[in-house]
Amino acid sequence: VQLQASGGGLVQAGGSLRLSCAASGRTFSRYAMGWFRQAPGKEREFVAAISWSGGSTYYADSTKGRFIISRDNAKNTMYLQMNSLKPEDTALYYCAAAWIADGDIVVVRSKTYNYWGQGTLVTVSS
Image (cartoon, rainbow, N blue to C red):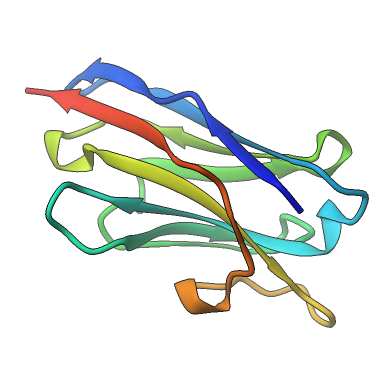
């Protein structure tokens, strides 16, 4: 599967952005999906994950209550609604897909993901 992330940009602190991740392939609905981010000089970190059905989600403590992950399997697209943005949210955001043969689970570990998008830059000014 190929992933294309979009929707990044420059926003003031307290503002909102919505990221999208469009996937190619007919079996998108069998992939658990996730968002990760990497700030300059820092390691890549987990942001949020969603199961293939969309029935289960999981968030990093730093994004819980502010970000909402969702997906539309009919459109082969995953989303990340980011609210109450902070300067520390500034990073390159990546979407990722993990093939799930059985079970409707979320995936947190980056090493479990099979496919990665190219990243979209989010900059939050103070």
